[in-house]
Amino acid sequence: MSTEVNRERVRQHKERLLSRYDAVNQCDVDEVVSDELFDYLRAVVADGYVGSGYVWVVRTPVQAVELSDSMGPTDQADAERVLLILHRGNTTWTVPGGGVESGESFDAAAVREVREETAIECDIQDCFRIEHWRTEADSYDERLHSLRAYFDGHYADGSISIQPSELNGAAWVETRPRAVDESLERRVDEWFDG
Image (cartoon, rainbow, N blue to C red; front, side, top):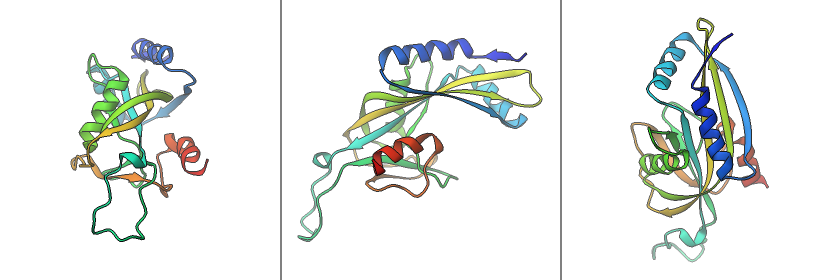
């Protein structure tokens, strides 16, 4: 029987999110990682890590900057778009977000991370997905627990300026990207094909 590390803290955060947001898609993710990665994750959890928050930020055409005078009469006005990022070393697009800091809520962490990674300000509207991650390694008799919360958000202010130490790029996307993070496939299907 594995020792359950961080399970109670994760349960408390999950309950708070579910009491605040309705109709949240929930799933459990079980993974087995290398001993080296487990050592790293174990240290992060011991340091207080409980999970990460991410935001699907939508910008309406009205919120887009007006076209400049140099744009021709055939140039079209903007469309509704979503903010996606490309992490360094990755080929799949995802949404901005990151780790919850001590004393911070998942939604506050998500908003802060969007700002830090892309310089975009956003407002949280809802939570559409919660993933409960359970991580193990062959050489350990422990299982680490963490959460990933995905929020719907609306653009509030700012222009994209990426954090180059973490990202290769960010963009306001109108059409379906070729490759997206597995956790977002359902949302991408609904948004771009629905």
